[in-house]
Length: 351
Image 1 (cartoon, helix red, strand yellow):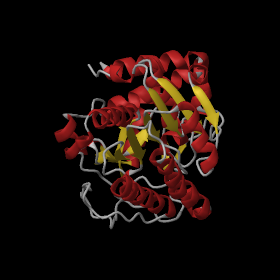
Image 2: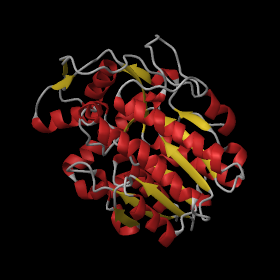
Image 3: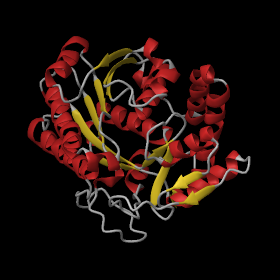
Image 4: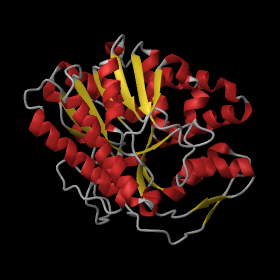
């Protein structure tokens, strides 16, 4: 049983709370009695999990741009958060090629803005910057699992901007928080999948859209390998990291939050598993579109979080896909039941 009672009555600020991961994180925290403040742009898709979850009625939801320092500082001054999770980002690799300046402005200066607010606020005791598995210099070595001490140098504008976000966090930590008044960490998550992701250019949402349209699933690159994990895996680890470093700053650090090797699979295998578990004769086709550069192989070494926190992944790839299938069938037939379905999944995961 995972005990998150620490968060009861804690004031927690989440940037990016209207996104896929943000909505799930809000749902977890509300369920354990936290006072949640969200700061984000409007939900990025229609439909979106934030609306389906009905979480807005249980939190303070502020629509704002992470690039707007003054608006963000006002939130800190008004609500005095004790714990901050920074999720706000431009998260799509292909979009970063189309809008690199916006991507850097959001992902780099957004990090500067949130850390500057933390620096000038006496209330924050624990800060976690959520980045990505793509921050590392990746020369596509097969079977190489990245460790936290390896060089940061993402290739595309998205990955590189998140590498920069990491470096900004490192600098602020060393420059302004050596007195340990606020513990600072980053979490480099694997490829997160789960019910409620409606983003474009992601394989699970693409599968679900194909089902809605009655079409065959199209896979751009079935041979690219990624470390897939259910959305609740990293979110609960974020909560554990933030809690532990709040209690003892020695837990402050840089962490790979990824799955075991058995869950690092290629996109073709993932899609085949989804089709098998969905049933109804669902199939997919390989239609490589020659898009911009993306690494063909990516794997994280998660031994550090296992050693420090005694953690091990709870749901492996087959169970993860089954959860997504179950969630999606509820969404297709009874979308009003999504809040209950989310609560059910969270309860099962925490047990």
